[in-house]
Image 1 (tube, helix red, strand yellow):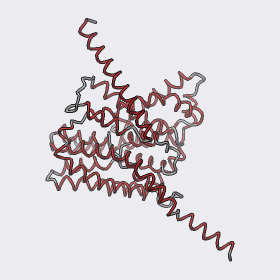
Image 2 (cartoon, rainbow, N blue to C red):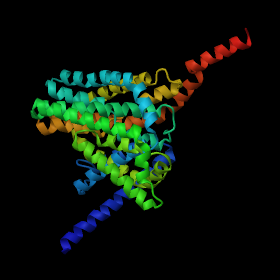
Image 3 (cartoon, rainbow, N blue to C red):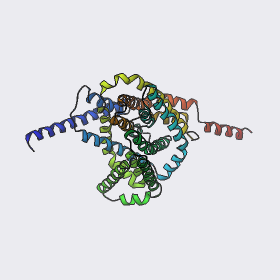
Image 4 (spheres, rainbow, N blue to C red):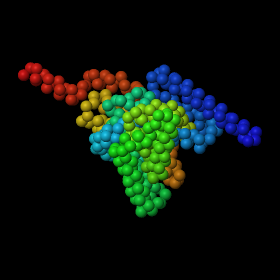
Length: 409
């Protein structure tokens, strides 16, 4: 390499080193304060990106790839916490709430677009932006706040999987409207996506032990490379078929079980944390803060309305379960954050030149929800605990009433 190339390479290495050290400092501050570091990562990206305090000249390809890997590893390791049987039960119980989720969270975006004077197609895109929660942010929050074992967590993941399944139909349909793809081709994409998604789910539910035995080995190196390679392969295949790479990785995680799942989680954990931090930083880097000012008010109103709608979604999804009031409300608050998928949907309209305000409004909206979602969980926790103490579960009250009748006939 000549001197110029060596100089550029050394500068990139130093910038990456400085960024990772900066992320470590932010993570240290967040852990000391007892909160998730996600909002700090996002704000740091906002300050260091285009129009920010300092503009970094990093390789966009590297950062983009690292961000995608971060989301994939987050969902894969979260899937390791569940079994296929548990997922099947949770999906079945959450299906009615999934339809309510679609109804109450998609409509506000469409209505907002029409009120702003947009055409129908960009309004439908905005509906998708505000509908789908961020699998990456939510997975990170659940991990950071040590809530993977909470009673409401399986319900949250079921809602996220149902949303990703809905996206498998939504994205091809919108591509028909946005870029003029033929109806036959679009419906074919939906059919293929449905078949592949169903096949992945079937394998996760019924072939966990055989797949786990293929990954198992006495060498940690073999287990790590096998699990990571399989996850990236399935995630890439799912994305190619216009499914979510994240949901593909999640299903791979569910497929692994027993000691193999525990070893894999321990081995991939450090990689997950590194690439997840890069994802949230990249999210902030992709937003020019100077473009957000004109759309802050409509984005804030939309974030408030859809935030309340997501709380209702979590409440409905946990109906009939043996969960207290705090857990049911916590499920809804966890779903508030929007992220990677919302930006992908907005980019469809931006690339087609449909509505210039779609990109900035979506960016402001996602930034609001991505920051406020994790913070709301932390801020409302004392209130949720108090509600749990003062408003016991209905099932608990019924059991107490039965016990009283038995002891005092």
